[in-house]
Length: 322
Ligand code: AMP
Ligand code: MN
Ligand code: MN
Image (cartoon, rainbow, N blue to C red; front, side, top):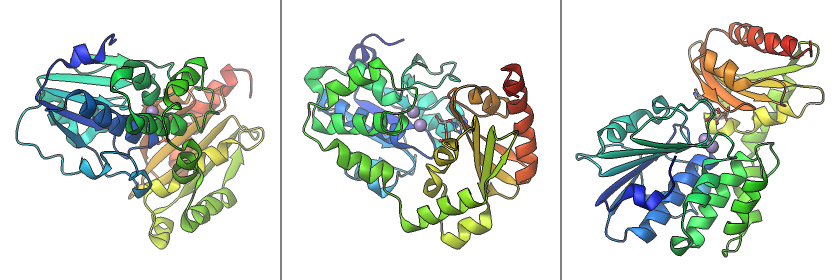
C-alpha cells in the first residue's frame, strides 16, 4: 500500500501513465487526473499518457489531447503508473513500458487484482480508482482540472453515487473535490446520462430481445456483429445497457454481451448482491468487482449463456434463492 504517493514517485525526469483497454469513465478520470496532478507537482518532468483514445465527450478534461494511442516510446521511463486495471493483461500495449520502467506503480480497486508492479496499492473497498487518488493527492497540488477529472471517475464507477460501492469514504472524497469550480451536473449529464440516438436504439433493441430465465432471477441479452455493423456501433456505444437490464424487478444477475469477433463475445455481468460475479468472470479468465465484472468468451450466444448460467445457478442455489 502507498502511504505517500509523491515520496513513492520520487524525483523522476520521465513519467508514463496508462489505464486499461476500452477505458471507462473511472479509467479516463484517473489517468487524466493523475496527469493534471503530476503536471502541477513536477513542472520540469516529461509526462506522457498512453491510452486507447477515450470518447470525445471526455475532451473537456486536461490532457485529453496529449493522449498517445501509439504506445510507442523509444526509452525507459523513470516511473510508470498503471491505473484502474485489475491485471497487467488489461493494459495490453502498455505492458512493455510498464515492465521496462525503473519503477512501476499500480493503483486500483478491483477485488480480482492480486497486485502487480514494483509498488501496488489496491483498495477493493473503494468505489473507484479516482476515489483512491483523491485520498492520495495532496491539497497543495490540487486544482480545478484535477478535481473535475477525479469527480468524473467517481461519478461513473458509482453510477452517479448510487451503486453499493458508494460509501462514507466516497462522500468524504467528493467533499474534497466539489469545492473546486466546476459544474458536476453538467459532467454527469454529458458523460453519463446523455446517449446518442443510435445508442438509445441499441438499448431499446437489447431490452426488446432480452430473455428472462432461472425463475426471473437472471436476464440476458446480446448485440451481434451484424447489428453493430448496421448501426456503425463500437463497444463504447453499448455502455449502460447491462445496468438497464440489471434494474429489472426481481432480477439478481444481468448478462449483456456483444460479439467482438467470430463466435467471440465481450461479456458484462452485474449482480444485485446475492451472486459474486467477479468469481464467475474470473473462472472464464476475466475479473472485476463483486457486483460488476466482465470477461471474454467463445461460442454462440447460447453456448456462452449456458456456461455462465452453470456458475450463476450454483451460487443462487447455494444462497438458497433457487
Ligand atoms: P464492464 O462490464 O466492461 O463494464 O466491466 C465491469 C467491471 O469488470 C469493470 O470494473 C472491469 O474493469 C471489469 N472487467 C471487465 N472485463 C474484464 C476482463 N476481460 N478482465 C478483467 N476484468 C474485466
Ligand atoms: Mn474501469
Ligand atoms: Mn474503476
